[in-house]
Every structure is written in C-alpha cells, then in structure tokens.
Image 1 (cartoon, one colour):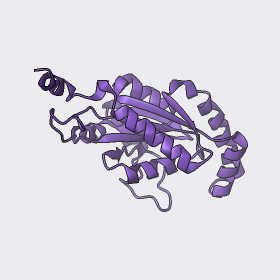
Image 2 (cartoon, rainbow, N blue to C red):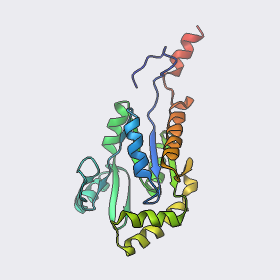
Image 3 (cartoon, one colour):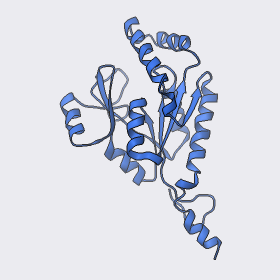
Image 4 (cartoon, rainbow, N blue to C red):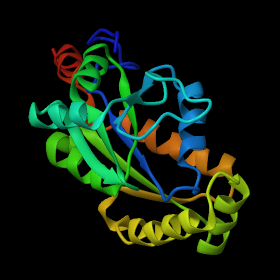
Length: 215
C-alpha cells in the first residue's frame, strides 16, 4: 500500500488473504461481488477448474478453465496454494497470481470451501482471515437452490448433503455470519475486513512511525 512511515493514518501494511466460505446458495458470491465493487484495494483470486464453462461465464474472469491433464501438471509442479475435488470436478488457487497481487499491494479475496480455507491457512497462517457465512436455515437454503432453476432435484439433494458437511466445519473459521439479510451480512463482512487491515501485526510501517515519534 502506498504510504510513508510518518503517515499516522495509512501505515504500510501486509496484505490480507480474505476467505469467504459458505454452502452453495448461502450468498457468498453475492457478498463477494458487493465487496469487490466497494473495495478498490481488494482483488479476486480466480480459481482454476476442470469443470466445463457455463453460459455467461468468461474464461480468466470467473475461472481459469483447464483440462484434467493440465490440472494434474499444476498440482505436480506445486503451482496451487490449495486445491480440492468438488462435485466431481477439481478447483485450485494458482499461487503465482496471488503472490503477484500481494506484491502489487492488493488484498486478495478467496471464494473457496472449508478444505481450501484449511490448506491456505496451513501455508499462509497469519495472513489469512476466514469468514463463514451461514444460511438462516437449511429449509431456506433448499428454497434458494430450487429458485435458481439451474439444478435437477438430485443435484439439489447432493448440494444439501454437502451443505450439512460444510456447516459442520464452522469452527475452523475466524468469524461466522448469518446471511438472513444481504445488506446486513455485507456490512458485517466489511467491518471484519476493516478491522483485520488495522491489526497491529499487519502494520509493517508502524516501527518507523514510532521511532520518529519517540526521538
């Protein structure tokens, strides 16, 4: 982040690796879009996936679409920060793009599941902030998935079973929110991000300011 050690309002700081997780249909993608539109210092990590591109998606913006052989090569050459199998396909976070964003002074937003959040935390530790978003109820979650009209009932049943498993891992997160109102949930996520950016442990420019202050 551009700043000087003498600026008490904008110390140079370490970037935040900001993870949003939730069951499919609980609203994390909506929250992520709102956050990216509102936070110029935040960039989205774009995952690689082996699943086919869907109508309306743009390669390189929504996902990096790769075949299984390319994905396996990337795993073998340690090009992912994290990766997982989800609904018969593979998803992973390319390491190089995240490192480039951090080097450019950006915070990085991740839309990943609990497995990815756990792997990312094991690698990046204190730079990672994990937020889990609950639906208001499982009945409401099923209703939201049905209203999408993009999945057959069997797929919705599979998503609900996975949702129950994902919810059981809530205690692996730093913060939890209930998305019963999008604006209120969004405000909570913004508050968490603002507080994490201000943590003393992230303020790498603080030492220079203190030295000047105490001369």
